[in-house]
Image: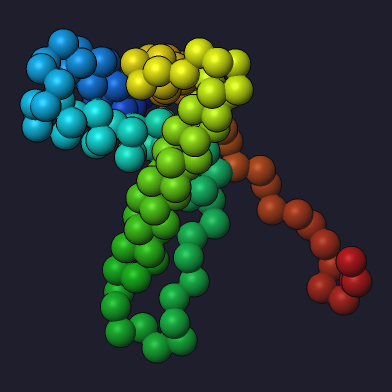
Length: 142
């Protein structure tokens, strides 16, 4: 792992710990709100999608028949990972908040702390490898 990969891998947990530190700012502070919103929108999802990064890159997007944009595959894969990170983050926020509501222990600080710990754990986990393509015969039916 290169130092650049390590920095990129540690950005989501750092954003989470920064959002937790921002809770010390006054309640109406725009900086506090921005730090929390940015982390909750993309942090947990970026760490969890990063776990599946090699598996997602194994099968790239297929471009249109006419090759007008030579960078279509790269741009399409990047957009897919970004949108997946946002949606996984929102899902993680909803699941953690629902669990805390169900156990009657809900507070914004607990949601943020739980997601920061999840993000930190996901950043330290080893990446999933892509499975080899299945070997089925051309004429065989599934």
